Length: 373
Image (cartoon, rainbow, N blue to C red):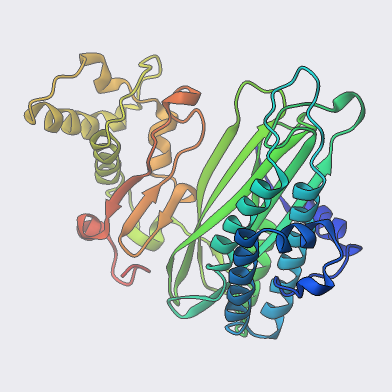
């Protein structure tokens, strides 16, 4: 199930509201008074990472407007609170359970390295926009009968969501886009999952005066499940007031002449990566047979042999992703379609890499004035 994470963000923000204020990421070891600060000051590698983080924080902070500075401070406070709880209050190993709890030092080292990567995205200039990155983190102890030894850290439920904002937004469309992004953060998973580890990330692709394209990715592990779930999708919005979801007509104009070549090009992309369909029980729609037959002919012409039933072996749902604008991630190079768990017919059958098609290959089908390079 896909739903938005507005409630998750609200709970995570409130959970950090009463915590101690964040430092600017580095601090005076002579004044260290917490378990986290003491650990950092006693380890040269952690101290060096802390210094790097503090310098990067100040560097990125200088790129932002007043609201962006406030948002970044809130993100940093959330990270400090969560990483301190996670790494200096690790639960003891559960008798009979796997010894998969990290040491406080290795936990903090991992947290610093991840936070450095996150901060590097703050203040990035893409097209006419400077983007801020907002993060909220939550670490919740699992107590009572639900206490377990599963997940990233035994006995803890860990959540992290990230989303973009246009910094120093002044136009009506930019202000509205920021509001929409805060409400659009996707969360994938089972409704009946109580104890979970959750991570939601994003990437920004094409960004111009006409449109902004975001790729969302969501990973969730419900404690006790056989495996985790992952979801990926595109979110391209035309920058009008208010911004609206991209429609096929925005790229290709009226009609469906673009569908068959787009399916063919994206199918060739996943085929070239080595992906193969594993279940032919759900035949493709009749309208898809011609482009698939052309693709199969191309594959055979290259000297590869394939089972005859594969000509109709791609499921209809799989093919629908290729022509669904809600799945498109627009980049400066072309269109990408990212895949979620079970898109390939089973959990392990999902294509490992996104399907891609270049703008140059779509040029005959693009309408004049489309929001592409």
